[in-house]
Image (tube, rainbow, N blue to C red):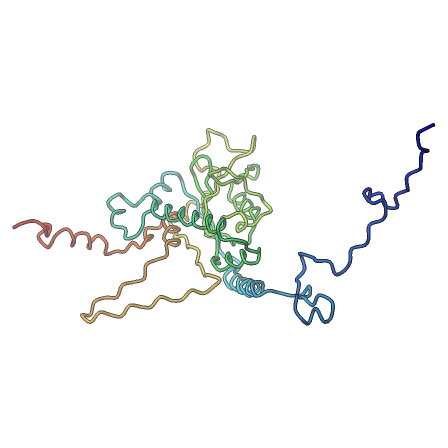
Amino acid sequence: DDLPKFKQPPRLTDPGDHAVGRKAPPVSSGEFNPYQGQRFDAKSAAVGKNLGPDGKYESTTEKQLQQLQSQQAKLEKSLHKPLQDRELSASLPNSTSSTTSSVAVSDRMDIDGPSDGSLLASRMKKMEQERKQREEGGFTTKAMRDLQKMKKQKIYSHVQLRIQFPDGSALEAKFLPKETVETVKQVVLSSLVLEAFDFDLYVAPPRRQLELTKTLESEGLVPAAKVIVSWRLNRAPTKEAPVGSFLKPELFRNQGTTQSFPAAQPVVPTKKAAVPKKASGGGATKEPKQSREDALLRRMMGGKGGLGRSGDSKSTRKDDKGGSGGKPKWFNR
């Protein structure tokens, strides 16, 4: 009898509002929105509302990015012309090794320029600096990151691919950066003697299978790369078959043809280096050195003129070692 009488609790008008027991008020239009540009000045206070930028507002960074994107589209239109000849050629393991490794040890000492190891070390150092810059550089928007990437980007005339088969034979051809991996597979299939063969394409290391729907540019195969063929089960040549017998014989006739290296053009034009003046004594002017990227590309594709190699390098070494008599200059007579 001492207990109070039970009272029915009030009914909630909004099931989501359990704390107050009433419907939450609507969000006012003047509430701060972090995803919308705000403007706080005397004019906005006098009007009583936000006079910030509208939805069509574009920052300076976005405008610069759009200009570079239009410049990139123009360069791609001028450089990426339909290929009349893919320069398709096949090679055997022995001929391939003699072509790519034709530079002897003594000849490599004559090469004027950085070695592959130094180029790789500089590349790793650059990647480490970029990583530190991303971590310590503070807040950046997507437009700012895309703008920095666009300023360093280059447009290449074509992509030089070397398709390596499991038996050591190889197939070389050129493609456009916007072509898909499916196009590469169709070109390889057209080079085989039997249509029953089937395979997958991947790059290594690390092993990563290429998707047929993606472009060569999105797969990171620009400007040149080596793609490896992996035969599918029961769709491969027999183990007893001779090396390279699954390729059309006429492709081996183009083995000695010189492959054209991709021509590069930066999206942002670089300032031309000043041409050194001719010496007063009538000496020859020094030729500008090739860029490291072009030199590494020529070395990777088997070119003999890569890394600033010149025809007078051997004679220069001989002159440094000794005079006309064949004795070195430091030899005491």
